[in-house]
Length: 269
Image 1 (tube, rainbow, N blue to C red):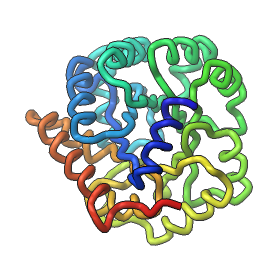
Image 2 (image 1 turned 90 degrees about the vertical axis):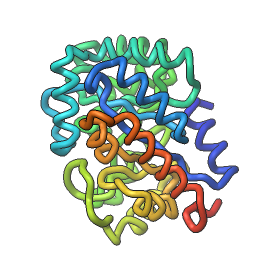
Image 3 (image 1 turned 45 degrees about the horizontal axis):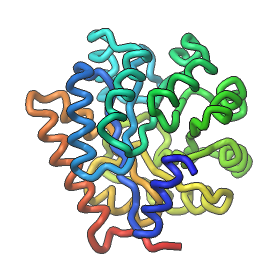
């Protein structure tokens, strides 16, 4: 069982939704990223999602786009992110998932990327601009190396698309809570429980919800129907501040408490 699979199994037995914070690696520099990751783990993160800086992050909103630009300006590249994960892996054992657009992986070489990612301690990869039915070049080496491949489903996904993505996902399924780009929202879609139920009917993999989740109340709402909650922009926005790391830790701790405390815990199946 992969490190991601083992983590979700442990959480399932404890009836605890996963808390998955997202930050951009290298924002504003790699040293700060390492420090923030350790703070997030200390605050209760179950998995860490690291964004690989990219110049045209089409699925991301303005907050994350600014973070990617800061990271690129600092000179952060995919190889630096892999090195960072290798260094973090010496000090922590929770799963690390990279979110990367496909161009950096293609430039690196999909097979070489999978080998190096696993060697450095990466557990899974999310590629927002790579449809699952066009991902054979990545899927084959990923399966060979044991790197989980996590694809996205959205409210617009048809049942046929859900079936296909479910077949090609490993680790967990990434459920996008809304139609559009990442970013904080005042409220979540009322259709989210139905979307999660449609996906759950077609896979036994854990389902994690991201895009738009930013407050403890929203995290609790999502945690009641999903197996994991991904929070990105709200944390990334805090990292723009001079006291960002400490603020991000406070928010992470409050999200963790919201997911753990009654009535937030998801009932076991």
